[in-house]
Length: 264
Image (cartoon, rainbow, N blue to C red; front, side, top):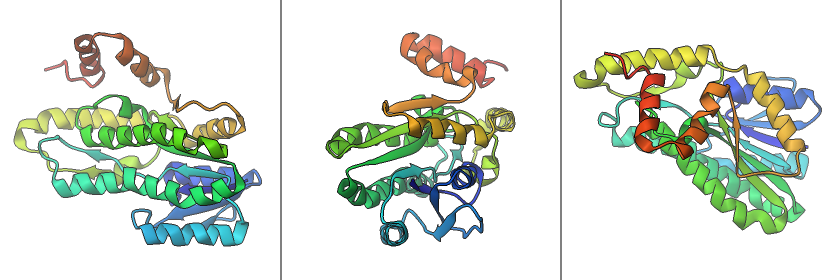
């Protein structure tokens, strides 16, 4: 297959690109940084720029003639109190996590329609299903991507094109180095520091990125897709059905305990 993956300069995206390249697929990685790898071709691209996206997709098509899979992996985290987040920080986050992913889908869909086949995986987060403390806008940006994916599934199905979101739990990467950290004002500082330390410890103990690649490989081999798939440790995945089933106040109390907000 010809597979296009965004955000391949490091972390999950890099592991995905090398994994699928090693397994015989033609892989193109779109990232702002140029990455040398014997297993995939990098096309330096800022996916927030529509013209750059269109140019990159046309380059893929000129070299391969088709696009079978798009994995929208590029994104960034953002931490800090809702009150302290600036308009610029919020817009930059949504511009990458939502608008960039939409621009990628829009660019590959004409080719997929022409070949009457294609699969799109939008990398989301288990945290998109709930508002996480000090990660409110990250949760919101991924939740918006979830809803766009649900909508586009109806729109592209006549051409045998499918799309889903893959909600990941904590994956062991260097994401902490690349998160945007907003201002943290004095009223929130003590609580934020505690939650932030816990957040980073969860990442350090997270699932290996290679396991994500193996899961996606199985997903691509399946002919029956749902709108949403969940991958991560049980303690994180269970938070999703619990939110559906439990009374709101009970669920919030559980989340407070999970995030150590129930302790003085």
